[in-house]
Image (cartoon, one colour):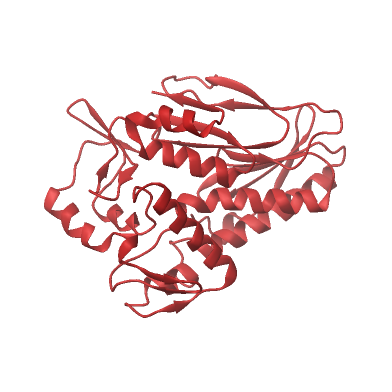
Length: 302
């Protein structure tokens, strides 16, 4: 979830019926679409959103050496007192751990040491995964707001919820700043700030998994609310005809079995949509049944 200061610039161009502001963050192409007649206003609004996204990236990226995540991960078993925003993120992650029956676990990021989802065929040794699992398990963590204490060698990774949180924060800031309808899109996770004055919906395409062209699998109309997508379109291992998703079950350290290739969920906020799409992926073959039970609009590609 890191982009680097050298890449931090905002570029604005004219679209068909809106201005498009572009920047990079969290290893993703990002954009803010603004239904304003002014290029200067579009640039200003995009800059507001971009700087908030970059702030969140700087604070919560596990790739950076001097933020709160590094402090937690390098504490060597010592307790760390957290600021309110970080404590809120940890509380949310703890709730997801309970709701998912331990399938969503922010301590499972250490499994990346064993897995390399580069589209190749190499699988890790079972003994190596089993050894790393000793450092996985939210139930091993001492958490009482605002104090967090990991066992020595354990780490947390907020990458599974950070981007959606950033979408909602940026969208909220734009909603407070203007009554112009804006769409914030961080690498496919997106939200609309408010209804357009002309009540026209934003057109949003859902990427087709098994196609070589850029034609979307579905084209949605979004006036308000948010969308989030989880999937393994670009990160996987293919071995002996079996495709191993990058979405791991932290209880055994191996990829979730029979999950859809992609799940997109619509909800009031991007955080809600991301939570549901991620929890659905972790359900594997039961993804659709899980989402049906939530009563939300969703799109699955298997």
